Length: 218
Image (cartoon, rainbow, N blue to C red; front, side, top):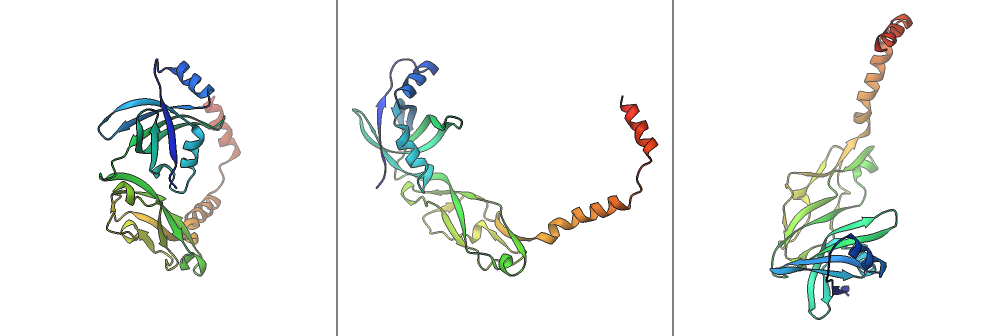
């Protein structure tokens, strides 16, 4: 069941002291804007917002914001400020959503299975893109895009165009962009080994010369 966030409008000055008073009362200051309506300053319960952010769909969740005396509107979280030391939210930006208007959002990509290039060919999976940008209606936003990579062999890659998707969404990230590939471990370490060998083959500089360089720096 979608979360419903209760909100109350804020009045008076909107400065740091006012924001502190809101947080001292157990709420956080927020802004609600978009969909052709004026922005309004509100205060909301941070626990409700955290439940949304920690849900599977995260900040792509669509939920009802019920503003006291104004009724409910559909909204999404578009920005938030977080205090990591105190482990608390400081401020939240909410955007009204028109369910019949296309939106641009970023969604995570989940790789399922173990690539054959890792399992039997000694490779390492490198996920280059962990999320991609898409365009679709708000009700069609996927929580994540899943793709089976079990058939991915050594030196093979997965591109955005290979990701499964229905006709309801359009990829905005370049379709030839690499999402993941299986790379060779040996290929990654050979240049380092070659450099080490070259360094070992180079005669050591005489100690007198080293001292001379040190004195020159002084």
